[in-house]
Image (cartoon, rainbow, N blue to C red; front, side):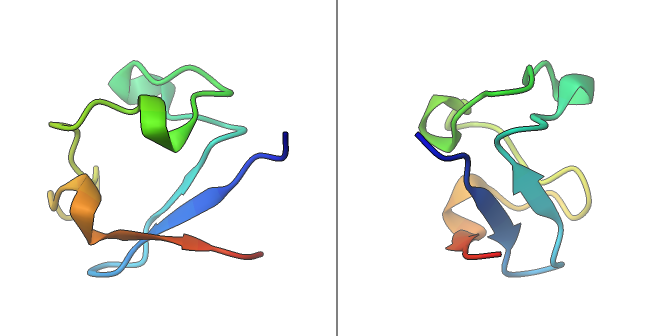
Length: 56
């Protein structure tokens, strides 16, 4: 399955499933649905509900 990218609609920060975000304990390859529901954007602090999947 192909990895996807999710963009914060507030600040534009992008979560890339392929790269993960190790600083937050999200190992490379962590799918968006496996990111904890209480996770917040590392740039602006909004929740997962403020992210949209983007086609790159």
